[in-house]
Image (cartoon, rainbow, N blue to C red; front, side, top):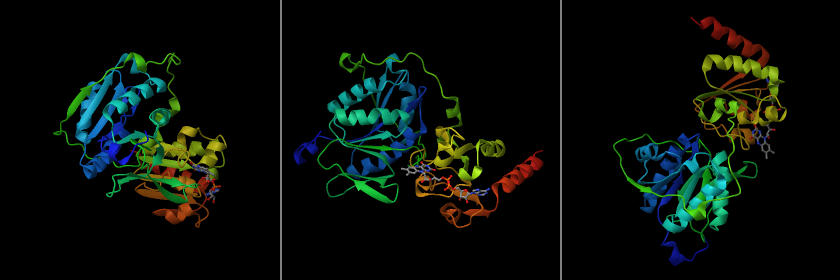
Length: 339
Ligand SMILES: Cc1cc2nc3c(=O)[nH]c(=O)nc-3n(C[C@H](O)[C@H](O)[C@H](O)COP(=O)(O)OP(=O)(O)OC[C@H]3O[C@@H](n4cnc5c(N)ncnc54)[C@H](O)[C@@H]3O)c2cc1C
């Protein structure tokens, strides 16, 4: 809501909206709590986590270990399956009741359906896909930094005249804190009210996307292919190589657009952001829209016949050559090394 300087003082604490998938709290929630902890410490305030689900209260109390001071738990069978309208109504009512200064949400499929609705209903702005969050010490404004103009510049956005200040962050952009299981905190139990219910949508059946089981955001090693893989058969080679690494297969948008691999594997600005220990880029030139999704990986290995691409230039290890000679050779070596 739009407010003046005096009313700003009514808004306190940094909220994190817990991200759940099939009833489980996702690791991005811990990452957001870590970021919220830093912001709250700068503001001398608390971190609250809002958990909306069915039978999640017990798991919710594990969030103190990551830096939460208070968990607001709403446990209800109606929240078993995600319905954006219901959760948006509920969250909006809680925001009006408790007046947080900052609300952080994951930029996941769930968060992207939820938080823009809430920002409209509370008459606030929303900065989506932030890569950095900090506080202006002068006035307490949230400094929300995100890539703009195709990733060519970083824009820092502030919502000086509105509270709460809302931002979403993609998984693996922030670092998850080491859990401290000796930490404790308060639990507030809230419930759904008549006014939160929506009659428009009803979940009839939940069908899981089997492709999603190869979730690249959760992998520790990614072997990614680009246009240089030449077709779906090329990706079969990468899948074979991945069997020895136990990671996930990623892709550039060019490969996804060509229909060689589903969108759930796309890395980059309009795909997923990943932060793996090892990222092996095969036939990906490394345009900025791809790099923004993987540049924080610990070890980047690139295979390309052109040594001058941005990916080859930024890689820790750059292998110059034909993928269709190098990858089969690697698979052969891995197979020979098997006991
Ligand atoms: C708004 C917007 C959003 C975008 N979002 C994304 C995004 O999220 N993710 C993304 O990836 N892209 C995104 N793009 C597209 C991006 O700009 C590039 O077009 C794309 O990343 C290029 O994919 P590529 O590297 O696979 O293909 P190319 O740039 O064509 O590179 C192919 C590479 O393969 C190498 N190669 C070819 N054959 C062989 C071989 N036999 N052996 C070895 N090397 C070989 C070539 O030398 C080349 O370096 C976006 C673009 C826009 C405008």
